[in-house]
Image 1 (tube, one colour):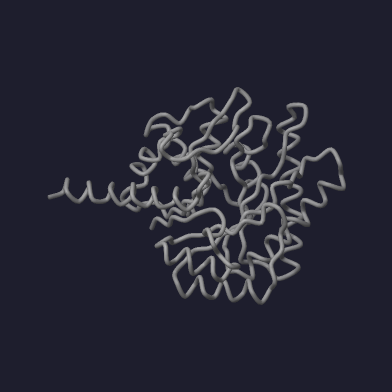
Image 2 (cartoon, one colour):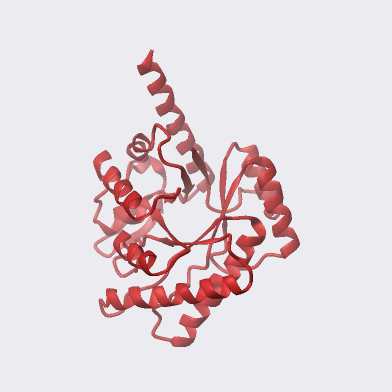
Length: 278
């Protein structure tokens, strides 16, 4: 199954329940709630929004605050990161959102191994607190980073998964394209990433997609799909056939428009395959 939806509330939404209904009305099958500035939502509203999403068949996820950094040189800020993850996980639990997405850290002095160790320790502490609070239905999604100083290659995410249960990889294809200096050029490039994903994790794929502008340092800014950097059509060809359960979150500058374009491309791919079988 392939689900598609935007990052953030649809334009004009009056709160989370309305956002869920507007997303469904736009024929989206997924919606990522954004807590990138602060993790705050009233419990009763979150529960009602989650209930409405389930009634409408809309898959919810959540994005934790951008300022999480388990590798901060300020120990107090590193501990605050655990709190921000926990607060997001608690809201996700109320919403019935199965995964929260986060950028876990920034590498200091090129100490990538040390950063991985500190991310694993921080994530483990978060999961312990979640378990103590009875939050056992939310997975912690570690997103691949777009800047080269960002922690979060697939290998680094895999290393944390080897140490900590309850962690899943979240692939941002734009970020991978940026940090590899535009390396996502062919269908084979996408397939290699998907093969590596399935090697380290056998569950559903939760991913982000947008085109991206980059420099030698990696990600600069997100772009619309028509820029084809990387090309969503190539990714769509890779996931055809339904062998992998996929949720795609649009992070284009206009997320709703990007999600609609993704749905159209995926629909055209299906139509093309149907004609080929005739």
